[in-house]
Image 1: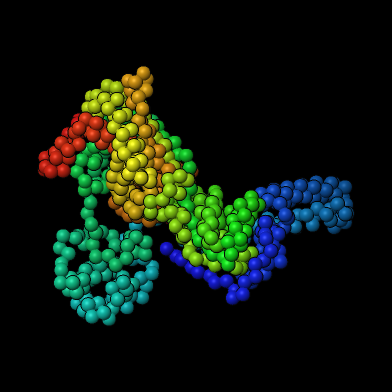
Image 2 (image 1 turned 90 degrees about the vertical axis):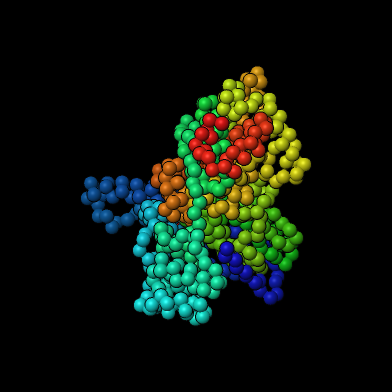
Length: 562
Ligand code: ADP
């Protein structure tokens, strides 16, 4: 997490209240301040853009016609009358505007996010890690030295362990040497931790520092989950016996009832910096400033320059005394989006600092975001993808597959998931075990497992429908944080699991569609998991089945028929 503090000038005199960006022309602009072409007129950017585009097109059309007539009538082209002069000036002025608005933004985005664009045009580079050492391993100073010398240097503290990759120029050899150095320093081996069979180059500078091996996790497949008319086979990385079998049983019940349906209600990653002023009144001024639609339009342009995929949706403000928390929400294409939204927020903070020079940026993340911590803000407003998923499970399926009854399920759900969680003071925990399924799919598909905290917020509802015969089950999950590009999704194993789900990498036709589909699959899998565990509880089978699958070494392949 990048954090940055700015300090206000020693003697702070608050500028006069500012309702809009353009009402502050007298504010001192630093040399690095970028004057926006959109500042040309005091109207919203989209109207300014439209106006100049129209002016450009109309003037060009007028001039072409005039010149065509002149050619026909053999009048010299350089004999320009007033209307032509005005048109020429309009063309030049609108061209300058359009180039400075779109042209500079395009050039800036190429220069400032060169890496992003490389990713965008070479999507497969994210999916297939290159076995060759990355370019930042240039000039490997220890490459020619014997392993034994390098290990001794690390043990003696002469060569830092973290520098091995760049000093040797070979990620696998660096991991091997580090491992041996650790063995000698700690006096303990790492015998059970595999070293071979992993591409250490693929994690360099992205996923894990100072690697010495990798942990093996079994991946089971549940399904097919029938969701929105499509079949999905669910990869689940877990060491909890019964989990895959139980989810599989839930999938079977859903499939035999005609499938589940899902809706993505909202799609926006958040980041909330905290800034401080000398007075609460001044902090409130910035809040009102951000709430002005004109200012929001301006700041969106600044924010969206962080990536082709970042699109600012909303800024939600909260004040604590003289501290202002600004919760930025934006769509992030197929990326989970934390890096993208953080870059956009940094752009905006830099920009508004010009108009609010007394703003002290305390932290780029002020916890109102809120990332990897239980919080009501995510539960209420959502973070990442907000998804609702439902199914009607037929009476005979409840009996045959789930071995219970609709009334027993409804009763247990009300007393356990609703009333029980209420007296426990639950925050987003109105479910039986959403986090079990979320974690297993997150690990299998290269998501950030720490985001399981808010991604598992879920309320499970069960009602008897169709004259009390069938079961309507729904799960509502407001904060599923997933991506199909970036982070751990690029690694070979995780990428294979994404591929199995048909959501590997960036969606070329509709950026963001892969990540949204993955979020609905997570929700559908949670629905299956809730159905099965709640049925086991309703039927009093939980302990029995756990004893069977957790404590025995018997073949569990028959679990689906439970
Ligand atoms: P995050 O923001 O989730 O932490 P990254 O910082 O790795 O993830 O950003 C995702 C990267 O993938 C960016 O460099 C972005 O340009 C690139 N990318 C390529 N295609 C897409 C897409 N369809 N959606 C989002 N990002 C994409």
